Length: 458
Image 1 (cartoon, rainbow, N blue to C red):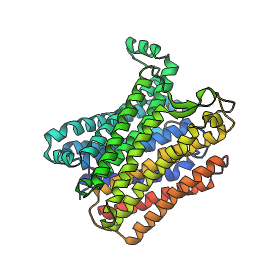
Image 2 (cartoon, one colour):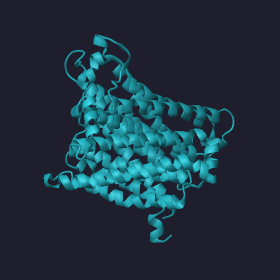
Image 3 (cartoon, helix red, strand yellow):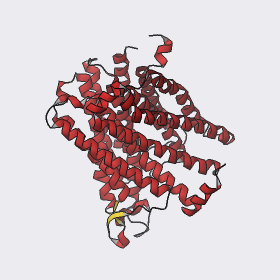
Image 4 (tube, helix red, strand yellow):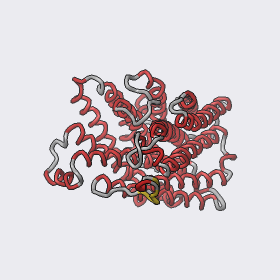
């Protein structure tokens, strides 16, 4: 393979992005302003670094989605060629976010990066919609795995909408809506004014993007495993799970559109307690549906028995992939929902008395940080990279030792991450177990990098 062919290869770009993410996470504690175990929401430095990692994961998703659905080679070429320039822009965006004199430069760098990725996402979505009617290979994929393909389409659309929300927020926060037409500013005033609008659109962006990305990862994994060939009830169970996830994505997206670009106030389901502060937020109930869909799909995959028939490397990666889903669902639903049902105590992370706060606010504050780092950062990264590697794998093995080490590292990191998050929360900040879990997950990315290198023969 020539150097030219190397850099336009989806296989090499997966390897490159895995290395970028693994190294980025490894050195992150050395970056000024980055403290992943600091209670509360992300700081501005952490938000910038987080986006520098997650946007590259989004590029990976675009590349692999086009690859598994057999996009035309020329369009795949555009996606793959974009990888390295966007990686450079991500690194520059992190670096130029620190000096005060570089604000304008940084705005230009990050703006160029965001618009570039947005255009790639638009191209991906258009292709996913029209190619089943134009491309024979894609038409066959759609016929065989219509539920996963449909989930990929709606998840891509939702991610694109969340990205537009993010760009809107950046436009208002950093450029004060420079060049906005009068009717748009009038709409913002109708929606509660600039401050309220920005708060709503940032919240919608942050809450929508990761569930949408997670749904896309689930769809990619399902297509990669060719679940249409499964026999018995397993395929039906997987189809049901995909349909449930599709409903969750559509419902979630609708809620966030009308609550950001509109005046819709997201209600609380089954509110009770002091002034109704306890109860599940309606949007969280819908993002939870995506998790329930993933859980149903996991049951179908495990029940099919297909894992036992895989070569060991693919089997270990698949087990690790499903484990990321289960861990994320446990944290967001198993822990997050009970907190919402007891906000009179937890108080939305605010000290005080209901409904403006609660005596257990510190636990909610710690959970916010813990679930952001673990369930909204590390688990999507691990799941996205694993799903991408499986998508380009052939049914061949690499070292049994390397595969077993990967599974051991990954599962131990996930288990310690979940347990460590709980300890971190209820102990008011003892984060050593969580830190060990995070470290093992990062090391497992390097194990995946090694396996990817061996499999791709680069």
